[in-house]
Amino acid sequence: MSPKLFKQKNGYEIDGLWYPRVTSICNIIAKPGLEIWLANQPSFIAMQRKRKKITEWGILIHETIEKILLKKNPEIKPNIRPSINAFLDWLSTNKVKPLSIEKRVFSKQNIYAGTFDILAELNGKLGILDLKTSKEIWNDHFIQTAAYFNAYNEKNKKKAKTHWILRIDQYKQCKVCGARRRDKLGEISIKGGKRFCRHIWNILKGECELQKVKDHKSFLNIFLAAKTLWELSNKDLLSQIDNYPNKTKEHLTLFNI
Image (cartoon, rainbow, N blue to C red; front, side):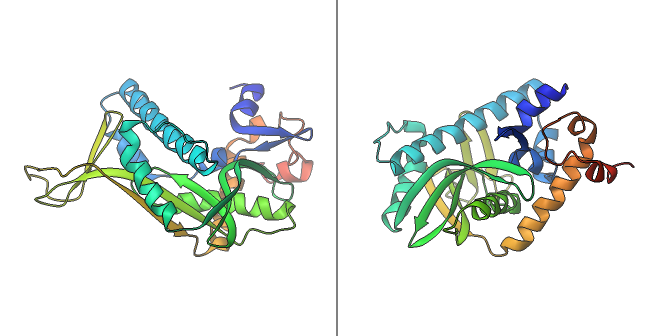
């Protein structure tokens, strides 16, 4: 990969300097569940098609929810209606005041940038709210939001108090064994229950789960450690980026191994 393409894929130009993306840095962190999923795919092409469908699903959910928060009355596609209904139920029992959507932040101190979903006051508390459409909420999610939270508070006088993950999903549950079936744009997965059950599925149901970070400092430290590892893995390309703030003789010397 050329340095020019690397810059385009993995960072932002801000005030004449290049900052690596939070998501690119987090990709260096091992994800055993993803590796198992990849290994179970019939072919590379099939895997790419499924990942594209899953990504499209997530984008559709994100865009619809963000429009709802901005009171734009979006069209709700039938295939995501259960997820959106679950979100609307959650919204009716929580006081959410969105202040910014798709907000970009950057850290001059730690040299990274990123874009998070929503800056909001949730039940009176200012924080960063990131939307996920995964099966579960994982630690990786909080590593990412910890980076956004840190960058936001570095620059703004009115500090965010916390960060949350809001997971939106939908599934059918087996009446016999309790297994859950998820079907996203043709990508079907079944979790839990009994392996040899002749499943009888209930109607499609949405769910909305909110989790607040429990140990922000630990997640931020993990992110910063991941950034060091990411820099080590990409040191040859980074050394060719003239406007990367970490391109100093002292910094690059750390990677002469």
